[in-house]
Image (cartoon, rainbow, N blue to C red; front, top):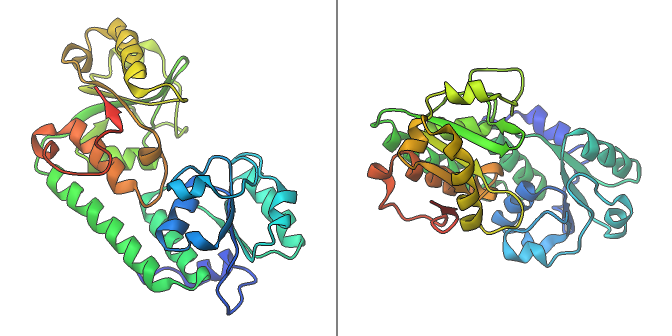
Length: 291
């Protein structure tokens, strides 16, 4: 884990000072989870409205939404470190905060490998590099164990739907595809230019999916969403996944957030794809999916 580029750390933590930050604002749910996992929760003075885990994060002052951070609220919180994403909306906010004299870390992670780098970057900037090394190493170890166990089984053909109307699925250029692969699956979607492409009925009918995973959306209970999903997918009765009743709705946060709970999400997927290997494995995500 120590091979992270020093240039990355310098670029991310532009304006870094010797003293570790004591007042941290986090504008992204996965970054907030990392900050708390590093034992820095008592230093957090603000989070986005979307930051809901761990439970302590819900009690922190809100700094706007993930897509529309509240610049005035952030400045008023007087943070000595703001951690945010690098996409356009947060990038613009980051530039405004830098002009106001705040120290900002704009972080980018769209793969599991990049997650490790982000953890190490936050640890470096927050003065807890050792904890960051340990956290990244633990996540990697847990992921590697799942990968090794799943490698003994035949790959299962997986269709992962992000939404159904219109149909949008997980493409191969995503970290969710990495989860499918390490959990013993094979994405049935061919490579496209989009990370989460729209697909038509013909693609679904001919994909041969043996397992269909659908990401839970909104606040409706997963059991109800599972019922709705089964009714929807029954129109594709010839798919092996539908014939064998292997359509699953899975809680979104642990599989769609690149953060410390990634092994829990990967384990949940592995249990769906290879219950014969993972059904007896204990994890913290057992009540987060429904069939």
